[in-house]
Length: 500
Image 1 (cartoon, rainbow, N blue to C red):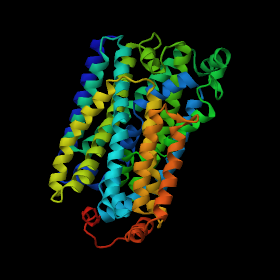
Image 2: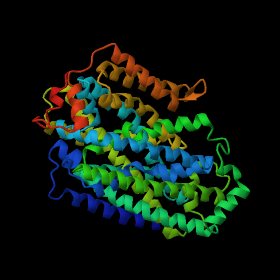
Image 3: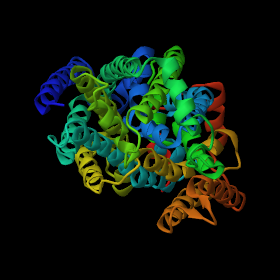
Image 4: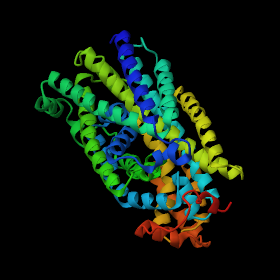
């Protein structure tokens, strides 16, 4: 594929994306934390749905999930469907996040937990744990773009060039107008992702003889691709290790849960959830079909992560379709990265910086948040330079670390006895345990970190809570969450009410 064609198409995408980001800033408040990081809590259901979809379905899908399908067959579909079913958690917890966010003025999920457990140390622990695991996850997205650009152009555009370009775009989209520019550019990117992926997949399947021929060929030549465990990749233990953290993605990943504060109304939230489900179902099927097509068209690749780049550069895809898909996948990855930048910067400024400085006014927090964005991006860029393989597995590894926050989140809404000590020990101790497991090879006694992390965090949370007393605000918090009662509390008082 011609690098000139790729660059010219990228130029159009970049120009349009920056135009949308700048437009999103006009006439809209971004002068405070709520405005910059939550869009004044006034986002429509349509924009929220597209942005939620683009943030969630990143380079992981058309590169990572397609790669998993290439190496593991139909088990990849089951893996992704487990995540898809986990979105039911948003239907349960979304309204509660939204209610307490409005009542107490929360900007970040970590701030919410710090208030609920009456301890700002909990907020700091959640913020730092999120940084520890989300920066590598952002780096995985960058690496996906690097592999894609280098593979599709046969090295004419280097891995480093693709990674640096994506980093710069993520910083620009994040800084122009905060979450507004991110959400509006996400919406553009989600539309591009869906249209181009459907077009490219339909084209490839047609070139291989049609859908019936594709599955007939798989059944005859690679029957193991249509059963589980198939080639052996998706053993039962491996499948559980990948799917358990992924099921809780919508709660454990703060760049996703933070969006539950943003819809303008409960009606907008319902539209966001329904729109995301429709988008995700179609995009999941497309990504799996793309991976199956690569198995037939390009057997014997050295790395599953090369399935998409090699397929785009093959005779089965015309250059003009291939280059549009490259731009779409870059857009998907950038949408995830800039969302992570926005969320982590808000957590570091709102929770960590404000904890360290008693004079941390909202204006100062906003300045710190903007300064932190490029720093986080550069850290992710450095990690991406390691060029680690198997994007999908690395993405799940990040979720394996973040899942230790889930017991504290569930306990915040459903267990009055949940206490700060339990939350702290489960988050810190659970996170360190997951890091230890990965340091010794990713499993203990043959059981992967994705299975071990959550039960360890649950035990620590329960024991730590039972040995101490819960916060005095627990009852009021849970009443607001469940019934939506509103009291005359100033919207930005939450952080000042949380003890050190």
